[in-house]
Image (cartoon, rainbow, N blue to C red; front, side, top):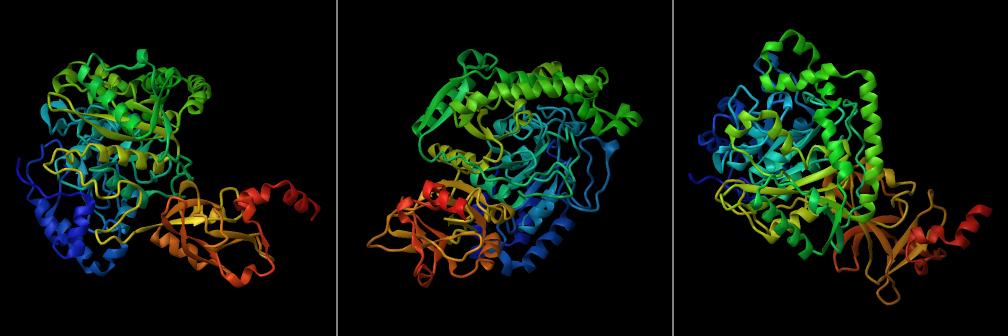
Length: 612
């Protein structure tokens, strides 16, 4: 294989910081890469445009420390708008040239990243195979006779073959996870509405998610960090909530019951899944077999029910005027919408609600779900002979995820004896991406693997979680311990949610602190003071914010509170709310309650509040 540059984000960043690489030099290198299959690009890299982008970045060199994705190249699935580049959704007759970037692309540019080109896909994001396109099938970089997965085929191949550091896809039925499994990549499917869909050609608007393909967990999570956030211009955008998962200690993970596991006769895929289950157990996980039937029943509704009508709705005008321009298989699938009525739609909606209720006990038995990403992988000629049947089989473990409002991350599971990669998926309720990324990072570090199909190996020294660090050790995000009015359910908690802070869990400080109920503060607040001689452990909540968000929060903190360094029970030092010593004179000490929340809920305190 032709030697290529290691495009892992941490490597490029270290080269930029050391002055050993410039954006112009990187663009010149990328333009020389000609080893990709023709089926990768729909709108390929353009030299003049890319050099202009690189020159603009070089003029911003002094901002490098504050731009987490400075000079990082990425690819964009061709159903996501990039200003000045055609958007076709793999249908030339549908083509238009947008005047502005999709929100997700705009946020990446603001973070210093730059788009290289637009990638191939199953037409109108209808498929999991990557062959339903007039631009040529996506071929697997490990064996060209096999599919690369879809619908985001080109985006996955571009990352796997070293053309870009990461890529954007979309995921409605698994399009951001299936190609990740087949290309030895991370496929991060966020909660619905976490990343804005403004500027994305819809497949099923109520289910669509912008997804991320990364070489490593850390790369994918760094992209999620800068692209997350509410967008009032997108009616399906949702305010980002804090997750509750803490998988750093013992956790329970659910797998389908043995008779529900389906590998389509592929013993190698079964072997790799079992190996990953063993690794999760080594990380402290307890395996629990549960009944996945409500999830699999929901999965069957996506293409065999009325949601196909939502696909037809997305292109209804185009379909009427350009029926002959649709890919034959795509047209056949979307035509099923004509068989459903409005009453059928409500029947399906009610059935899905019932299935969600039936699935609730699963979350009482386990913290996360773990499945194969796909049962197996197929050759291109097999898919062309059975285009609908084999595509449906690939969605067995993925189709239910968005219908059930889950978050997911697809992780490489190793290689079969024939050299093809397989993957597993880790699933959780919405908003639990931080916990999923942390666990996926630990799983990744247990088995250092190739970066996609390149010759490089994952750099396990790089933090595989949501924080972003430079090689010089300078954090581009901040962990903050809150002790009082910013706790969940307290009056100032919205200051954290508005800044898109990620909830990391409930922790305790080292036994060197004292806590006081401060006088005359609105809303009521506690004061945390360090006392190495008479201190105790105090409960705190830990959050992660970008450096910019942290600065915004600190600017509004009134005296006598401030931000200092707080030592946690596990020995870590994090930033946290502390109190100036003068303010505790005459204040009531409440250390004995163990934390602000316990103090507020104590019977004597509740009685006093009621009397007031």
